Length: 349
Image (cartoon, rainbow, N blue to C red; front, top):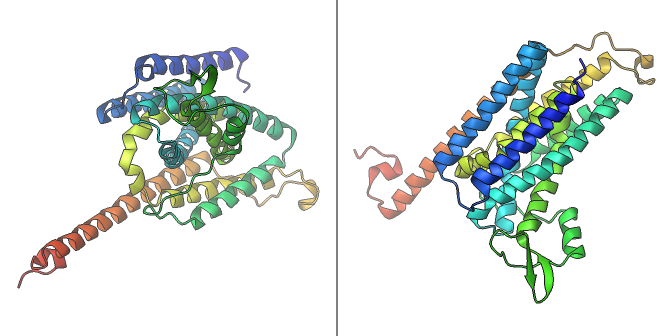
């Protein structure tokens, strides 16, 4: 089913309206959001995504509706991993907490535009070249292996290096080293200079492009509809600002999140390769004919694997970090009071 142009236009206008509303109601006046504020608006954006998915399922059929929910859950989980890097960028640029909302909102707007271009390019490639699924699948499998092999030591600081786009902006345009409130430019000594606020927005937006390289093929592995790929990306990104402040220190406790995401990306990568084999047109594979034994993985199974993997990774992370915290507390107590039997694990007998 082809999505009419007016629906695309209405969707883009609606997303832009949400961004404008977000700016004037939360971001225009700089402040560090409370946990309650972040939790409330996170619930609002998640509810909005769920209502949209139900409406899509009722109008377009529950086959597409299930594809949307699988894509949304995948995008949302991948966006949580993005927050680690966003936190590093905020720390690297020493962005005051009250200005971080504005940075994230503008960064998300930049990311939405760039992802829209990526999704359009992906749709065009899929329509013209069936072998693109082999490329997407292979890239997701490579990303999954890379994620699984990374050393995720929460106690070791991660080094951040400016992206090529940020380096080009710094080189081409005059910038200041100090923040001037939440202003993007400032006039000093008769010159108009960029402030670090604008640089960090560019850093957030351009860095998201790297995440789009795996997240967009991942959703294309769950649906062939560009409209579903776009809306899952957009609705997952719209709630990213609130999620950033809501999770806070919890990010450091999700020690097995990357392993869980590796499993999800690996599964979708295999799914893409199997689909590519099923509809194969590459001449040197089975003579350009589809491979009969290549199974098709149903969307309900994809949804089950995604949700089950996320639940397992989250539970394992919280159990592991809880045990580590208790062990550290016992060691600290043992040093401060060696005679306390609880500190050494004894029963005092």
